[in-house]
Image (cartoon, rainbow, N blue to C red):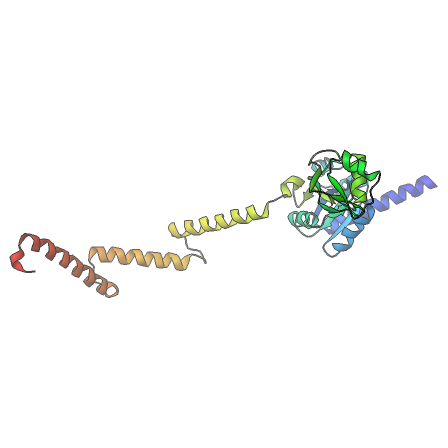
Length: 288
């Protein structure tokens, strides 16, 4: 009986996952490594209006996709390993990526964890009483001084460099200092929006991307104008440019049309003065 119940429960879970895949056109697989249950709940609550975060076994997700006849199952299965959260949304994958990047939570350092960035303790009063704790400061090569009965850090000090492993003593010391130097969040491993998009492809530098788009717009605008290819944004400039070029040709050719008579007279007068000046050099007696 218990086996049957378990089978029924699994099928119910598969159906629940399948319903999410059918409801949302976009989904992502996110790495749960380092995330605590309460931190995940905070993200679920924060984004409840924009997406659904569902935790399920990889095997059940694979089964749900297979039952649906999902066309890219083989490509998605490559990411169905380890501890994952499955994110369902109608927002595009890039929006999801930046939502999670901007909403990482501070977490205490754990022994054996790799520092994602330089971990720095700043100078100032720690509020800790002198005693055995001083040996831990010494082991971490943090310069200290005793002032007003408490331990002070003498200067800003990097205790763990980026990419290095955090030792148990350093993790304990950081905890005693009340520091939470690790930013934890959901890291999207892949997203699906009609095609499989690897997580690293979502890490777009927005400033660089904006600059590229601005350059592309300027180039397209200039190409449209110079090629006389009319668009809603360039037609007025193309017409103005063509009008100016036509006037220049007419003036240079001396074609007497009403629109350029003033310019023609001005050009003729200028050329006449120039000719008179040259003639005067050779025949000053003419008094031109």
